[in-house]
Image 1 (cartoon, each protein chain N blue to C red):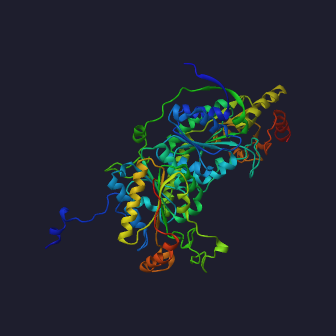
Image 2: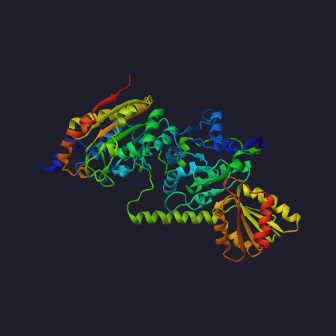
Length: 254
Length: 361
């Protein structure tokens, strides 16, 4: 059988969502960002809301998210994505608005913007990719770096007495009355990808129903920053990140 | 039709005028001496009057980034603060200038540095016209000197912001913000509909339709050549603004031998000083700056062929004087006189400075 006989629409079992551009992803091989981008865009496509959605990209590895997400996007200053999203959503309450942020952006420099947007119950979706390290700037300590974990600014491991404790933003925002759905997921295996996509879908469905802030954390890897192979990084993540950042829904609508 | 006449504070007048100018949104954080802006807006329920969004943000930093988001989606949006709060907004202002978004920012200046004082000042001139945030960018800076101009300039500011896709700063001070004067208000202008925004502003992120290119609001260009090209584009825009938008007003300059150069509250004081000088037989005049960027270099240059000296009067220790001296270029004597830290010069002090520093100096 020739290739031309196989490549036919009726034989198609999987295709890239048209809400992802053809640009080559700038992420390291093995990184979870590409999958997190794709499932977010798949959710928008499946809901048929790509043309009504404005995304907000952060500062960090995903600063160029707008190169890959084929929708209208704004790039925000470091940590300010929830404020930028607030400005858009307040002016366009019928449109869908989401932020896509890393741990340095959301849990360090943007802590105030994150907590207050969630506390006001801004009707936006926040997608929070937590890999416990600053990837873009070269592997420095993040607010979510685990105790004892090495980074270029905690080269002997994070000493919580000197450097403070990791911050569990997801549990924190779940306490706020403005959030309706808070979930923690992962994207390193097909099973986890399906669950994460389901959570993102629920977040946007609740945004459609104007239920307040929806928040999905994705615990991810950083094999470059962690100085591991992709396979080692995923294994390390399961053994070390998941016990500290347990997966599952933390807050669901009543 | 006669325009509506009211007695208002400067801060209230600008808030009312912004509603009438068809503003879509305001995001701010309280700080003295401009908290009346958001208080007035909240009391007026603009969401009911015109559909305008008014939100008290958690910080000036958040407020300016809310402005970024709304402006990036094509809305007529503004914010206000006073000096320490404007410092906090500088990161966002730089991003807004870099991403070429239209918006209006009001600074009701108080004395600094640091927490400073709550009394009026003009010590934020450098911050306003020389940058403030990081990178090579310019704001269009308008300086009202009355309550009426607070109301008038916010209308102009929105028009200029959209004409050039550039942030416009209204540089006021605690006197203009707090004092009450009569003000004529414009008729209510309709806000643009979402459909009108989509048609007028192709760059605005309002949702990508099938078959169209996605819109991206960003100030990032990782390649140096791209960033240089963007900077060259910005500089061309600023040159165009300098060529087209210089605004000033002259008071008794026709036969003047000496001129005061001033803006805002200082210009009001100088206007009285001109009268006092003329009573004494000194032919004084006033060049009142309306735009601080673009700066009226050509007009100052022209005046150097006519007058013997210039006194720059500012409520600062000497900031605008640097631009005056550059424009004068050594042709005549130009000096600074200022009171600062929250103090306002009196007309007598200003006249004495003219007599001692310029005429007798």
